[in-house]
Length: 277
Image (cartoon, rainbow, N blue to C red; front, side, top):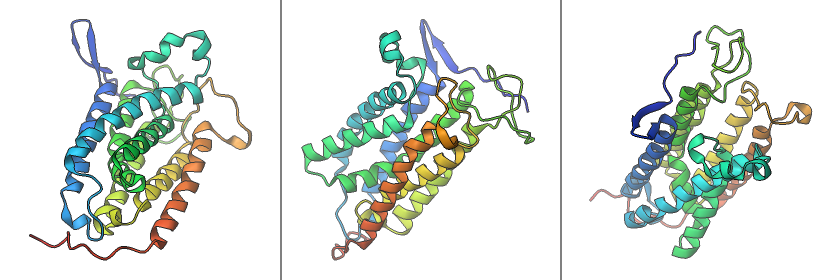
């Protein structure tokens, strides 16, 4: 299949270019914020515990998380994938508009920002994590679509009829792995977490939703690394491992632990917050 060439720049405004990739992050933050607020305002989700935050606190938290995503995502990309930039072109590290963001680095940045916010405001960090990750797959969908528009992070060569010839990736058809990730890390994982928050009401169980996200994302990423082309500048790791696999394995282990402990922890008595007004 031919690659559908879409201009990575949506519009030029004088010397400035508004890119789909940047818009994906902006839309992720705004939509994730409003989705989290909608959960905080839904009393049926909080049968055994009061909502994690007041809506006004969520408005404050979003700034902390934005800084965590940007700083962590860029730092993770440099440390995990392109450490040579530190001594060859350190100014490039600051030029985030050129692309180059690591999911795992962004996740670490969000964890650090979330813990800092929780400590400052006396909030349970596990419950705060449950709320944050429930909205994360929105970004998984939008950012991976932006990766596809950019023609980057393509998959390995394939003979499948939907294989695409990507610009700068040689003449062979390749898996459109960005779309696989958008579907699985975005749509499927969102639906799983939606079932957990709205179906099972697991926002009342500390850490379970966060554990489900970590486990789900980690397993999806490990699986998709088998069809995603490793970056050309990465070394050949033993046993066919990739950096994405190695970074995702601890996520799965931590996630399984959080699910187990959260489901074993006794629930407090019902608060009656889920009763209709």
